[in-house]
Every structure is written in structure tokens, then in C-alpha cells.
Length: 383
Image (tube, rainbow, N blue to C red):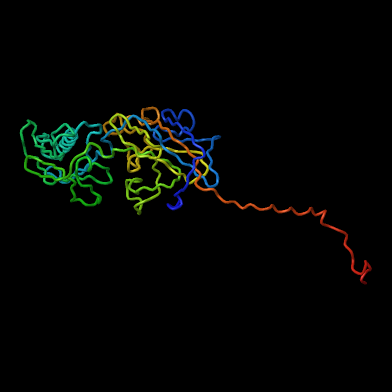
């Protein structure tokens, strides 16, 4: 629908009712494809229809779910470590910040430093690395602090004595393809994966130590919102970056499937409408037989999963040694689900003018239109 055609003047609500949604056990009754974060609603005999000059509007009145996701997840925990040492001429691997919730920035910096040191110990002459400096040191988000990452790793031998680590080159790369770890660590995002000299963080190498510094303030999470999306065509618009985490589109703005943008609190994700008009959709169809609601992050990814993991059902939970979830059923038999109240309105935005005239008089039947054929000259034969 063109933007001009989506403007309605003199609207009049001629019908209104609520739909109560609960996705907890939606796969047990109804569509077997239903999941806690991906719900299909089929109206069957209760199809919603709008007449001429009318449209269907959906509005979100209430939304509630437990925040059973992690601040640090697969989409913002990964960073590449590239370098060279006296024991390994070239090394390149993905290292992770521990995936969980964090009370403060110091705990994130500690996890980053510990996991980086453990990895470098296997690629250098050192037996281990000690976290001698970990900043920011404050444990209160409102404390006076610059919130900059600054960690110093000191190489130790098997006896715990400071030693030379033998690392000659080190780069930490927060690739755009790996997610949003640059926002957590306060580094620069690397968009060009072929650039081998790029480093997202400032690194200073000394004989016995390695210092890693962030350029910008750290943060505890990379995406403070959950996006409720609806598959039905509407007149809304969104920036293309909100749809995909890769450069799929070549335009700034595209047709949107976003229904609502919901703030994540510590324990709950809740929304209560004040006016009923904050989040709404004017549908482009006049007959509504089904709806589909999905929960995603700001890049269109399912919560706690990458773009390639859309078939996985778990956003947070127990992982194995490879950081794969032990169970992939959080959104079916686990605790990843939501409840919502959606208002449906039939809105009349114009009164169409219809042609009103006398109906056509039907033609007479063929048997009544025939008569006796009379020859010329009073019926006398011509020859």
C-alpha cells in the first residue's frame, strides 16, 4: 500500500473485539507447528472481514512474558583472536565471553580476560595468564567511572613465576558476521572479514604482558528490546537493518512486519498500552483468516539464536562443551512463551459511492418474440 493510500480521514470504528493470546501450550491444541515464540492463529469459522471502504486494524493492548533469555548470548559473545607466537606461527580462533546475565561490567571484563588468557596460554610459551588488571572495577552501573575495558594479562610459567609469553602479534576482531560483541566490549565493528590487520580493540604487547583496551564505554547487553512481528501485510515501514543482520537489502526503508517494540526488564518483558494506539497495524487485506506472531531481536533473529539457527527452539539454557544447548525445546515444552491481548477493529474510512439506476428490463423469451412469417404480395408466390 502506498503511503498516501494509508492515510485515512474521518475514521469510524464500526466493530471492535479482543483476541487473547497465550502461546505456552499452543502446540497441543490447534496448529502443531506452534511454538512459544512463533504462534499461528487460524480463525477457521470466525473469519474477520471488512466491507467496501473499510479496513482491519490490529492494536496491542497488553504483552507479558518472563525474560528467560541472557544478556550475553551467541549473538554478542563471540570475538576472533588472530596472532602469531614463538610456538605457533599463525593462530585464529573464536573465543567467547561466558553466556549468561551479568550484574555489572567488571564481571563481563573478567570473563573476557579469563577466557582470552586461557586461549592464549595454549598458543604461547606461557603456561597460563593471570588477570593482573581488570577494568572497569566498579560494580555499580551508576558509579563514577569511564566504563572502558582495560585488562592486563601477565604470562606465568608452570611454577607461577612471571615469564615471557613469546606472542609477537595479536589482533582481536569483532566481526559483523559474528554478531554484536563490539557493543559489549566497546570496540570497533569489523565489516570487512578479509582485512587481516584490523583490530577491534587496542592491544599493547610487552615481553611478559598483554594489555587490551576498549575504545568506547562497555555495556551489559546489546539489544534492550524484543520485537513482536506479524506476517500479515501492513502499511508500516522499517529500516532494513531491523529485518536482517546481513546486508540483504539495498534500500534504507522497506515494508515492515514489526507489530511492537517491547522493552526487556531483568525478570519480565511487559507492555501495557496507555491509549491503545501506540502499536497498531492497518492491514492491507479485507479478509483475515489467520495471523502469525513471532518474537525476534532487532536484527530479525530469533531470540538468543543466530540467523542460521531459526529451527532451534532454545534461547538460553544448559550447554555442552561445544556451547551447544543440551535441549532445544525451550519454546515448546520449556519456559519461552508469552501472553498478549490484541484488539481487532473494523474501521470505516470512506463511504463508497455506488451507481444506483433502474435495472435493465429482461428480454422476452424466444417463444414470445416469434410470429407468423408473411410473404410479400399477400402471400402469393414470387415465381
